[in-house]
Amino acid sequence: MAITFDDWVKQTQDRYWDMDGAYGAQCWDLWAKYSMDMYGMSIQDCITPTGYAGGLYTAYPVSARCEQVYERIPANGYSPVAGDVAIWGYDSYTPYTHVAIVAGDGVKDGNIYVITQNPDASALKWFPTTGLLGYLHPRTMPKPDVDNPTGNNNQGNPDTSRGGAWIHRQGDNLYLHETDNAGARTRIFYRTTANNFSEKASQPQPSDSQGQGHPSSSVSAENSYALYVIGTVESGLRWDAVEAANLQGIGIAQWSFERRLQVLNAMKTADPTGYEAFKTAAPEVAALMESGGTFKRSLTSVEAAAFRTWAARTESKEGQRKQFAEDYAGYPKQYDDVKMQILWVTAYHQSPANALKVPKASNLAQLKSNILSTSPFGPYTTRYNQAYSLLSVWDGKSNPPAF
Image (cartoon, rainbow, N blue to C red; front, side, top):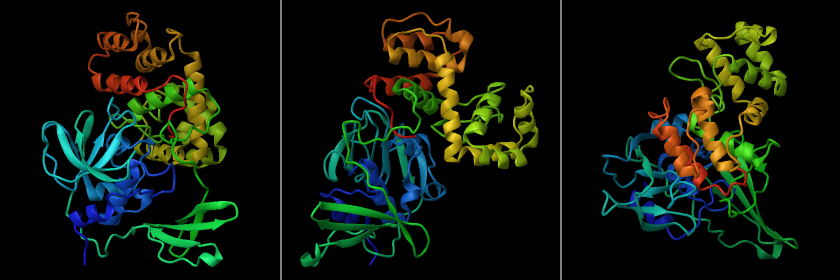
C-alpha cells in the first residue's frame, strides 16, 4: 500500500535522520528523506550547492529532478499547504538557514505547522515565518510504490556473537553498522552503478559551526568568507555561473569584461587538463587568454557552455578561489573590522569607483545603509540585505561552510 503524507509524518517523527552520513541529523536530512520517500529522488538530487539549507530556495533548482518534482513559490502572498517544503534564510531565528516540511495548511499568527529536525529529533512544531524565503511546492501529489522507502533504522536481531554488525538501506546508500574492540561505528556506501557501492570516508559529528566543512583552499578565513558572501550575492555560489542577461559575467564572483581573462588563466594554471577541452570548444577565447588580447564582447552560447563544463571540475574551482584571493588582497583597505571590510568590498566588487564614494560608517548596519544610499547601489536591496545577514551571524574568524 502506498504511504500517505500523514503516514509518512507518523513514521518519521520522534527520530533522528542522517541521510547522507555527514554531520549528524541536520534539517537538510529531513528534506532529503521526504523527497526520497515521497518522490523517489536520490540523495544527489537533494544536495544544495551552498552547504546550507537556504540554498534549496536561493539556488533552485538544485537538480533537474528537483525541478521536475517541485516549483518554487515566494513566501509573500502564498498560503502553504501540507506537503510543501518551507525554507528559511539567514535570520536571527535561523542563523544558519533552515528547511522543514509543512504539516498543516495556512499561516496562523505568523507561524506555520511543520515537521522539523535539528537540534532536536524530527517533531511537529509551530515555526515562525520570520526570515521565511518561500516554499518548494510539489507539482503533483506523491504516489510511492512502497512503504517508507528509507526505512526506520531498525536493525532487527543481529548476531551479537559475531560483533553485532548489521546493514540498512537508506535511499541510494547502504549503512554498515559494526562493533569491535575499537568501539561502534557506521560505514556508508554510496551507489556508484546499478550493482556497485563505494564507501564514503567518515565525517565528524556536528559542531558549533553546524558541522559545515571548510573550503579546500589555504587562504585565510577572512578571504574565504569574503568569497562566500560575494559568491552568494553574485551567483548563488555557482562556480559555473554565466550571467544570463548578456553572457558577460562568469564564475562564482561573476568576473566580467577584461577580468574574465584573469580568472580564466587562473583556472588554466590550476586545471590544465580541463583547459585543453575548453580550448577546443572555445578557440577564440583561448587565443585571447594566451595572447593577452582585449576581451570585451559577450560569450557565445557555445563558449558559455564550454565554460560551464570546465568550471564544474574540482581542479578549476581552485583557480577561481586563487583569483579571488588575489583580488581581495588587492582591494583597498577601508575598515579594520573584517565584517565591515567584506561588506564594503561587496560594493567595491560591484562598482569600484562608486564604492569609494560611500560615506564612512561606525558599524555594520550603518555601512549597509550608507551603501544603499549611494548610487548605483540603491536598487540592490536584496543583495546587500543578504550580505549583511551572512556577516551578522559570522564570528569574524571561522571559515565559511563548504562550497
